[in-house]
Length: 125
Image 1 (tube, rainbow, N blue to C red):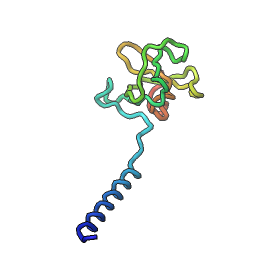
Image 2 (cartoon, rainbow, N blue to C red):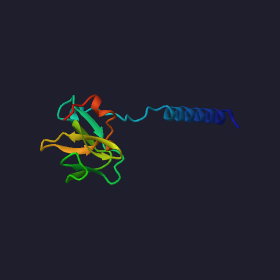
Image 3 (cartoon, one colour):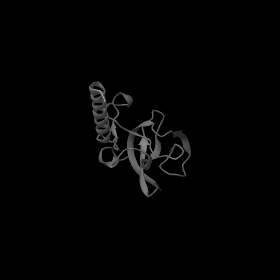
Image 4 (cartoon, rainbow, N blue to C red):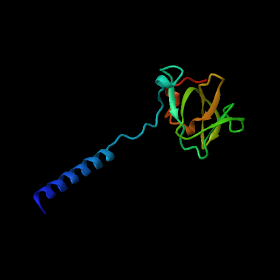
């Protein structure tokens, strides 16, 4: 192997190692709520993402799985959490979040949001 080819192979291997290291040590996506910034009704408001909802997250008129469905949100949708309360158990979890909406409160099970421990930073409804 020529010197130029050997040097190119070493550089390519080094670049691959740097890339693999960066991927291995990249920070994980946050599982907690975050400040909404310009997305929310107030820059200090808390936002989260819809996650692990099998066929979309059903947004309800009350914190209950038997309440009417107002609309459905897709996984990955960013939402503003207004406050939390308790309601029907979803997979053993009874915390529900009221989403901010100019048209009135709508509720989702906190089980399906990336809020972390929502009671720590959002007021009870």
